[in-house]
Structures are given as structure tokens and as C-alpha cells.
Length: 477
Image (tube, rainbow, N blue to C red):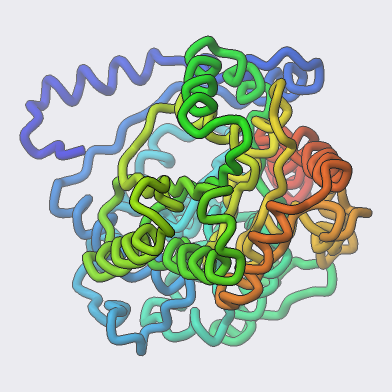
């Protein structure tokens, strides 16, 4: 938020409120014993909140430009020689560095012996290294929530060495998937000449300090979603949806940001192809595509709008319902959950995405009463594909399994995996999902559900902090 206009007294008041705001209010409110146990463990790390005030120009240069126009596209494989890439416009680097330094300074100022520092995501890639320089014996962890590209893409960034050195200030660096962790290790070898050990660690400097590189996919708070599905407003919206489309209409649901990496255009083109091959589904099925009101490319927004118009204009008669309902707007959380409960198929066609937790929420919502236990059509280029398909059985470099409850299941027993670039394949996936026998739908859903309820957000937190404690223990004062 803009802070230049705030009076000093206001900033002090904000800091005072946050300093007295204990984070225990973020407890998991689920009813299962395992969730409560996880939350109790997390409370051990709960502490006060400390604000970091940066100038408006620093925040703008850091987030709007460097994060969103340079790091985000590059990490999602929009390589710097793409005409739309701004990876070589480095005037915002100073703002990115300044905000990272401000956060690092706040960490150092509030650090006490025995504290654990855990830094998150691509907005703060430099912070681990900045903190390490001031606190050489601190226990520091870093987790990247988005994808990490191959070394051939990452090495194109002019600031590649500084970014890697910043991340390597941590004792443990976590990624969503085996693939992203491997890409990071390769980048360290190619760009910095560092040696990666067979156990997944990287030798950092002449003192022999090592960094553990791990993959552990984040999860959701499954119990709270299950509880929320029972809310009276969710039940009311479910009833309204059923009344609007009737009990026999098949609902194909998607919910994405409208950007170049979420594959909304690819999804609509595939659905158009599907309707051409199976025109009977123009009246038997309805796609409801929700796009959040983020800042979208005007070209992309126009292309998507044209595809929707083209599909809906292909109706056989004037009284027919439109095959696609496109909502470029934010909807209420209760409406969102109701849609997930009433969906017969949920579709994610991201071209590249770290982890799509919406599909995890869909699986949990399908546990509510009177749902179809609908199939999940999922892009193989999402981190979730490594969790919710046969690839979840992959091992970490040190030989440890990912801990997946469904690791013995094949993709044929879980989601319907697709290559979003293959319009024909995705069109076929629509037909497969809509015509899937009830017993197969139920079997696939049960396997997905078993995965999602075990690998929760609380489980992820405790797993990472446990690995961090193990990695940081030797040689620490």
C-alpha cells in the first residue's frame, strides 16, 4: 500500500498494533486430530509482526516492474529474447535490491538468538544472503512458491549471479517439485560453478558451508474448506446453480487469473474444438470460466473475448443457452465453493505454474454431499501434476520419497493429465471427463482426496521446518 502520505505517528501506531498482534489467530480450525496437532506445532513459531515501510517509488519499482515484468515472466519461461520481455531493462533493480535490504535490515534488527528465519518467494530472493552477512550463524530457510526455470532460461537474466547468491544464503532452499529443484542446482553449477552433491546439497564457499536443496509441495487447509462447504450461503448458492442449469446439465468449471501463463486461451480453443467434434454437447454441457480481475494484457483479453463470442455464436437456434459463461470478475468465496461443489469437471490448463491449489480445493469440495465426484483435467506443466499424478512417486535427490499418499497410483487412477499446447488432446480430455463412468470417477476422486487431505499446508510447514532444523544443526552456536 502507498505509505509516503502517512504521518510518522500513523506509522508508529501501525507498528504498535502489529507488535501486539499474536499470530496464533491463524490457527487451523479443523476438527481432525492430525490438523490440530499440526497447528499446535506451528504455534511454537508464532510471534509478533513487524512492518517494513518503503517509499512508494521503491514498492512500485520492486513489485510492479522488477517482480512482475522481469522475474515473473522469466521464471515462467518467457525468455528474455521474447519481444514482450523486459528482462534487460534493469532500472528497477535498484528498487528490488532496496526493498530486499529493508526487509533484511528489519529481520536483523528484531533477531534473537535461537530464532528461525524463513523467507518466502521471488519477491525476496536477496534477503537470505543479506541476513547471512549480518548473522552468519542464523538458521535461515527459503521457499520459492513459483516455478524455477531451466538453467538455459535463468542464465539469460543479467542479475543471475546476484539472485543465486542471495538464495544461497539460506541453509535450506525449498521448491514445489523435483523438476524445479533440479533446475536450481543446474543453474548454480552453470552460473556459479558450484558443486552439487548426490544428496542434493550444494557446497557454497571455501568454508565448506552447504545448502540443502529440497522439494516439498505446499498443500491447503483441507479441514477448513470442508467446514466452509457446509456454510448456509454455500448451500444456498449451490441450490441457485442447480436451479439455473438444471440437474442434467454438465458443468465444466475453470477459475484462473487472466494472464499469459494460465492457459485460459488454450482452454477455450480446446473447448471450441471439442464442441466441433461433439456438437451435441453445446446443449448438454456449459463451461463456466471465472477469471479474476487482475491486470490483464489487452491483447489477451481481446483474444479470449473473441473466442468466447465465436463459441457462443455457434448455437443451433436463438433460444439455446450459451455454451460458455465467461466471468471476468471476482466472485464471493461462497460462490466459488458452490461452483466447485456443483462442477462435473474442473479444468486447469496452465502453461507453467508453480502449484495450482485451486484444483486441490476442488477435490475437497467434491467431498460435500450430492456432488458428482467429478474428474480433474490438469495441465502437466503445473506443480500440482507432480503431486496429483504418477509423478508424485519421484524421489528427492537424497533418495527420500515426496511423502505422497497417492505415490503408488498412476495418472490413470487420479487426474486426467494434458499438454495444454495440444488442442486436440485437451479436446479429447473434455470428452473423456464428461463421459467417464461413475465408478471410475469415484475411484479417481478417492485417490486424489487421499493425497490432498494428507499433504496439507500445516504438514508442509512442519516438514520444511524439520528439514531446516536438521540442516542447520551441525556447527551452529
